[in-house]
Image 1 (spheres, rainbow, N blue to C red):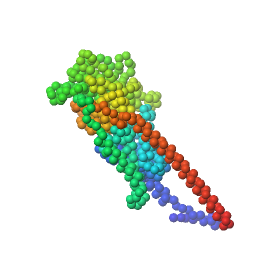
Image 2: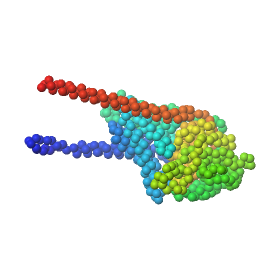
Image 3: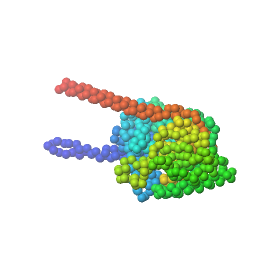
Length: 551
């Protein structure tokens, strides 16, 4: 529709641009909805739901939302995707803090993590036009995972793509390249699906050669995973051990659990006594050692009660404790090896947590932290552990990982490098309610089992405690907020997976390839712009020469 305005006998057409603007806004709205829905679909693919296969679909949706967009548009849609995912994935933080402190910490953390994803998506236009685009898009997305694992405050690795795959066709790839490779494979499939849809639409849904590259991207990663499964070993290489896990339980009161350490200790002593009676009655087999979860008690010197309990079992115990070593003024979050008998007796070795939780186990920037956290004045910084420790538990070489550390690649890898044949993960999830946090953490232990070819024993204060086989299968598990125990045989294994041999180099190679792809994309973009500029100039000269001739 046009209108005219008259001035000095000159007619000027006035074009109504509202329909075009409306169409543009509708397209933006569709992409925003697609990005948000894809973020929620990504969360749906994580435990406790066995929907690992929807995760590639989530990234296909993100890929379609980003297709053809420039820097700011890609960043915006990436932020929407990341915010939708993290708000759903981290809602357990709100269960922890409760209504008293409001949703600000949950919203702030979700928003900060969404910024990482937004920045990664802003870089995707650099590589989207390179041959094999799904591969480069996957690598660029993984950059934000590597960054947020490290900064700020030692990072926050929760919600990594690889952790969505504790079962399914991609899981076996963890034995080749760990969590980074699993995430990369899922992302390649997802972005390959997006490119396949784009190519199908471009060809009118008629098959053509342009379909082949995205089809390869879609099919190759899961086929590689299926081909790897026969190499996953589960049989004992150095015999088995019978392990007892004590889950004493704790009140489901969130942040109000502060100050109830005596209750948690009493619960674990009571459940241990119940376990001991069941063993003596023949209902359960005698264990080779007993495991208590993270910070199940305080230990600040001699502890005759624990001495007596371990003596009653007659086997060593791994005790998760807030531990103050003799002569030290600092408290440690530690796993203690507690031996029975007269010689030796008590604590013979211990491991100190190396990845402390910021604002809970230590407080960075205290003056600033007072603005937004209630824990500053009541939280003393714990002592950081500085190395992996091989714990000798009655002749069993055990690697200890404490709670939050299971999300860090290097912590678990180091326990295997020092010689552990069994991994014990102790955790205290009683703070976080009956939501999905414990399920998410158990999924990480399942991935680590395949990554390192080791059984994993998970001991949780209020659940979920579990026995995980070296192929990631959960053979025994408990329910949340119950007082119970597990007794099970676990295999000891000492072989190194390819992932163990490659170590951090898998991640370094993926990061390096992403950076190289961005450089290549920048060079190609610059070359294309220069070519287009020269073509425009040449066309202008030709048109100019023609006008002169006709004149």
